[in-house]
Length: 179
Figure 1 (cartoon, rainbow, N blue to C red):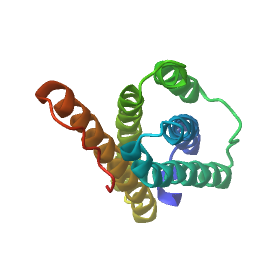
Figure 2: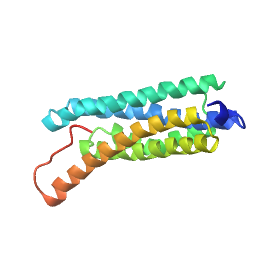
Figure 3: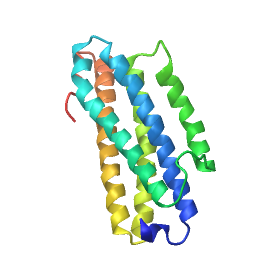
């Protein structure tokens, strides 16, 4: 992260804080979805729990890693830079869907997929910046987390596609169990 932070560490801290804000939100969203999945009683949904729990845990790891990076660069993980406030505002719509009492699980998966799209884009930006700065260590760390986010996104895409196939084309709903 040293090369990436050479020119403007304050701006890098802001970008990392933006990711941190989103990862914190993601953990909260996954916690809510996991709770509703566990209480659904539907065998197909229950078979998805381990995968979704693993994704939630990866989001929590990303959060912890970002906190460590921000602190290493001299930033305050409890601060609220402008970019973090923007991300918090942007994610409120997704949070509202997931925190509603009367929402169907398929809509929760859709909202999580929207969150994962934004998350993916954030890691992609960080990886591009690290590559441009020729910071291989940062690039590797960002690409690792981006790959994990891509796995989350693909699993949620498959889940949404299976719901759509069942509803539009008819037939039995067959949700994915393994990524």
